[in-house]
Amino acid sequence: MLDLDTQPSTSTDLPVEPTGTTAVRRYRGNVPGAVGGLVWLAIVIVPIYFIVVTSFRRQAGFFAGNPLALPTDPTLDNYAAVIQHDFVRYVANSVIVTAAAVAATLAVSLLAAYTVVRGTGRMVRLTFSVFLLGLAIPLHATIIPLYYLITRLRLYDSLLGLILPSVAFAIPVTVLILVNFLRDVPQELFESMRMDGASEWQTLIRLALPLVRPALVTVAIYDGLNAWNGFLFPLILTQSESRRVLPLSLWAFQGEFTVQIPGVLAAVVLSTLPMVVLYVLGRRYLVSGLTAGFSR
Amino acid sequence: MNSTPPPTGTGTARGYRAGPSAWWTLPALAFFVVFALIPLAGVAVLSLMAWDGLSAPHWTGLRNWTRVLADPVTGHAALLSLKIIVLSWLVQTPLSLFLGIFTAGRQRYRNVLAVLYFVPLLFSSAAVAIAFKAILDPNFGISRAVGWSFLSRDWLGDPQLVLATVVFVIAWQFIPFHTLLYQAGVRQIPASLYEASMIDGAGPVQQFRWITLPQLRYTLVTSSTLMVVGSLTYFDVVFVLTGGGPGYSTRLLPLDMYLTGFSANDMGGASVLAAILVVAGLLVAVGFTRFSGFNRMQSQQEGL
Image 1 (cartoon, each protein chain N blue to C red):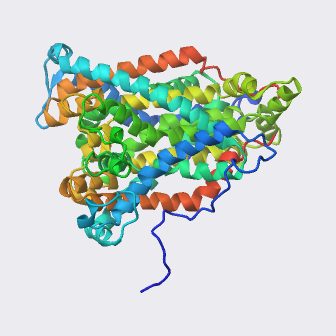
Image 2 (cartoon, one colour):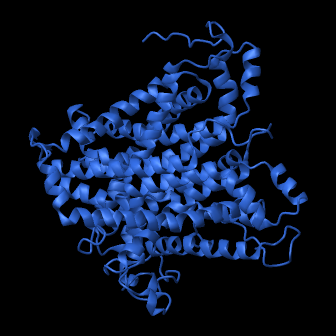
């Protein structure tokens, strides 16, 4: 028995900050802004709190009592039940698909974006237009021919069959965001690299890559979340249980445990936990990446 | 594969102005052509074929088109999709813009809030939908916690309410991402612009109108395009949350396409619906692009 009177809390214990309502600080205390910010906070936090708290309830105690009160008799049984349901395998599948898709997307998109911004000629313009077109097309509408293509390529029900289309679908957005960032890099920097006799490749690695890093982080997160949370591809392109990724397993789990809501919500929490951990670890980097801006 | 060294600009006849070779776009282009453009062409082809998803497809000409376009379910689904797009944009854009500007501030408490705002983005759509099913349950959901009767409605079972519920759930999930876009956008705005406007005696409202908004133009277009084209493909949230019900009241176009193809085994008819989605997306995006002059290849920060 550990006697640490711990309460189940979400990821990190954040220091409680004095909100702007106390003591008017020197920065013109924007009261309506702060109020709006706090209202949105409640909208975000209350559902999450409900999910977490309910996942520690017993099925018996679930229908009685206040759903927002802390459980009188918290239990980890729901979590145990979920983990026994082959959960680790689903996590592994999701990790493989996400990591491979994001790495490939970033590599090919950075090359393309750099070329769009620095390159000349009709081919480059045309390529960019094609990607812009991809942004305009609701690509998920192509799922039926894609299903046909993947089956014909003998990739049906394989993780590779999930990764390849995920990369293709992520490219337009990724290229666009990187192009937007690279456009704002002063041309003189590129010119001075050229004066120094650097090749395009060196310019890309030594100048563009460090400058574009904030955008890379942002877009990696976006693509990563899309790959991690994708539901339609796995639903249509995979079949066997051993190929299931997390979102699909949640859905299957929910079908099995219809009325066992604490169990279902424990699965929801568990499936989100890897992302929460990553976010807590990478947040510093993410925030500094986003706020780096361009030093001129 | 033998790798040729990338051509440097210095060796070519063009010399000074030549940039990287167009070949550098090839890897991305190859992925995109094979797994996005070819299937895109496939939509057009398959819409002219009868295919049950298992046996070989065979040609039927325009029969799928006449059948699907005459079906009242199609029109209903299209109208619903339009409603969702407009409502989603109207809900998400102002909120994301506000939260983006709010979290761009350097105050400590705003940084803490920014961390918490991000959390919904960590949930998958399936997880969000499953969770909200439990939260919104009229009998043992969140509404029991507070005695407000107006909260304990059948949010997902009442055809009058379910659309608003779907818009809310989608907004709850996606506002964090758009907030992040706007926050990054606001932080890119050079402080010198604000300083100059202060000297000219501009108040916060004028600064927002004449500096923040114009500077965020690209961000606004990017965010809106992602939002609108994204809402054309909202599938997973709705699929898990309502399955298109009650009745047909949340059977949006993408869901209609899925159910037609993979439940009713009518891949030809589903391809017609897919083609409609593609055209709709193109029209929307072309509209946005025209409207914003987005294609101009120049920086907004020139002359600073």
